[in-house]
Image (cartoon, rainbow, N blue to C red):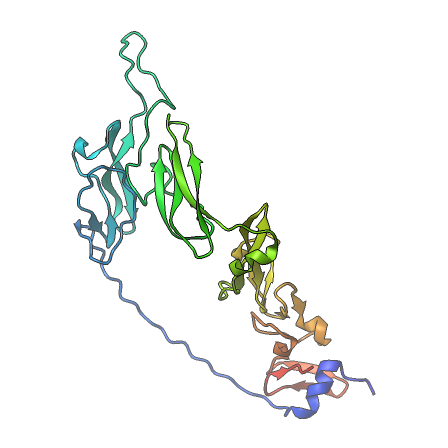
Length: 319
């Protein structure tokens, strides 16, 4: 007599053979779409602006289509010295491009000589902080590096250089400073940072954190280590079971959900239910993390030495 394969031989004696009809229905749902108000209105109390402006005196922010937009107003007096007023646009879904004003630095300085035109004089102006907690003009889309060991920090603009400076270090850290230079500035400024002295990695154990809650199948944690007498931190990531890592880049987006028909037990490998159980019809739901999630589906015709049959229920693999 021909032997049944491993999977079916384990579950066949326990399964009632029969036909099951399944009827599934569809429910249609309709969603009402509210009209967008594109007329300028006052921003709500709990709203925040979506754009940065670099004016000395800003005008009242306004809302269009529920989006709060900052503006410098209509007067050149709103701008700092060596800045001028410009009109920009911000796209609001359903309303299109909405105009607002901002201040930009003058590119040229008059050299007083009408024969040769104006000249650029980088590195000769005295720079100061025109505003806090906002990036320099043109840096709005960049991510600015946080300070290791800092509890609270502030964003600063110096010339064309945007950086964070620490206002309070975490417990165990000491206040230190670094010098910031800018190609457009004749002077320099200071950045407040934090440091933790060490002689070996064990001195930095307090900086190692627990694994974070999963985000798109990925977890991360901070690892503290001693580097040239100062504690440094690095980020470590991993994929949780039910996901697998596509490559070795240290970003959360590299974790991919385990596809149907496979299981991913350790966050790194993707194993086939059909191959590991020895049954070609074996499959699994997406995101499976163990071989016990593999099963032979019900209501499909299979054949072995006893003939053709169908299972009346999904039959799961047991180790």
